[in-house]
Length: 271
Image (cartoon, rainbow, N blue to C red; front, side, top):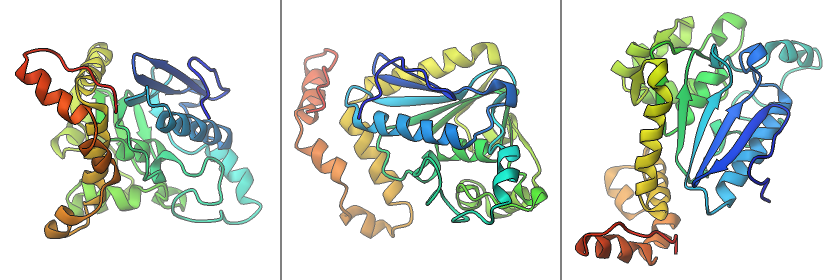
């Protein structure tokens, strides 16, 4: 089901322009805290991003000048906790918006995180789940769940040790200590750090580079890279990657090298 370009939800802004999906968490008055309604809307958006073949990549960001997202809406969480424990600790099974981006492992298109201000708790987990992260010098990251009697159940407890040295990751997981943008860049958690005035231009540069690539190549590369992470190298070479099979038999696989030989820009058809 396509939700259409320019549809305005209650909690999310979703626009599709020039082959890019622009997804904005839109609760700036509460630093883009994610409640059940936002999760439901985001699930509908990610379904559409995957289904719409005109979309080649997505950019995820937060509204306002203070935060990408501070994670779960804890006021709502406190009310819901009175009814008992959540259906699951890790992931979103049995919860509104399942599967959320943090456990939507079949999303084949690249997602760029545009981060300014706070990315805390579930907000940081969203950044960890994105493929590329472009952040302002004022970005701040943390997983403070241990201080709240919680755990980073949207993947932070799993992804951070995969993306940081183990002791560094455990130090942040166990204490909730914050990382500034420079530290995140040093450890490779983000791709680029720029002043906030340059953030949109930097994101535009990454988007332009993604649009130069063949859409099927993007999907094949992402799927192969992510599915093979935990495979021995020999098995990675022989595993099955459906998007690579589609790319390998596509017209685009011929168009790219032909355009190079003819010294022209390729015309991608995703066929």
